[in-house]
Image (cartoon, rainbow over the protein chains, first blue to last red):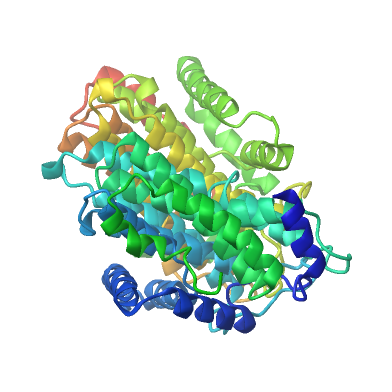
Length: 304
Length: 304
């Protein structure tokens, strides 16, 4: 795989750009990728999942007094680019026989974690070589910093509060909290973000070190999606084996998305995406194949 | 109380300084306060508690590979000024009959949360009127930002992992996670930090608005210590009544510490501290009085 990754770094025309899901060019490619990959019924499934997560979050962070707290929290959470990790969490829960309500708090927490990481990635620090203004700066840096700080515990609080003594699921909720807090921590998404930011410093260099793809895509999008798959399976009552399979599936989904967001429609990137897609689909082969079709769309694409 | 607070803002000679526990002048006053307040046996109790929390944290974040992750995590966690909240958490647990091991993970989490908030408060943002360089900047702003980001989920992960199925305490661990994540969030410590940073912008103004003391001391140190008292009681197996009493006790302890750290040895501040001390001690009157002596030292002082 190292060879394939190396070839991407050589022949990708946009490899000098810093990856950002909010980059309009990448968003466009992402949308095309998604549109090609989905049938109408799949699209309707994912739309309903995203819409229910939106509704859940809107109820959790309405714009209400004190406005100084809830206004930026609401806007920054919804303005950040979306990720498919929360939806994967719901789909994984349903795949193992759970009800989507069981994974809704975890999905919302993942969305908040992703938004928090995005905001901090774009924070205007004095020593950064150049801060990308990737979204409208309605709020000052202090508010962006502290609101994003608040999103991390708030997300985990939402999840912890979803514990229902009647369902006797405290252990599973705690397990999901460990998964999310570990994935977001200094050896997960934060490490990927650090690698990405440090990489930006060498923008002038020719090509990228191969490790970038593993240390950014795998750590950032990969870890987040692996965590989403595992959490969905945990909260849906999946077995240990199912949890691990959906964790691995999530890892490959995340890496595909990370690579695709960065390398877009480039043919070299597609080759790598295809390898990861095959690995991903292998993780789904022991599940009910009728149910697998929808979740597998996250790595299926007609352009391959 | 508003009158007393108002008088502090009028007559306090250091009220124009921004509060920071790392300000050497305040540290000195804090140490004097602590030294005067403690008998030798009390001092030995608190020293042993702090030392055990240190040991627990050192084991949780040793300096090990990958050094880019663990070195800053270790140093930034230990270099940040200490707070008495983690020790209060242990003492509250023991006061309700629990063993200190039951509250050690929560105490360590509180220490990490406090360190994270301190680091972000001092982050060099481009739009801040002047960033205080209150501690040695061994690491760059990116590392400070992301390491502190990582500390929040890491602290909650430590706590979630402390769940022991044999003890059947998942519900209490989840309750403590809700307490800490809520306290650290946008209507707790983060709100206090925001108020404090916004206040800094008006440094040139004469005196402070009275609300500052309630909106910074109460929200920041107050909320953190209230959470510490409640978590200790929850994890030690305390009743609802005991939890609420130790939450209130913690609130007053935190406010005393916040006011004292800011207003130091000023006589006006002592008057206010005395009022809060009386309220705090009232919360302890129904506990075993032999056990109460040590924990009450957090607000007892011979200078009153």
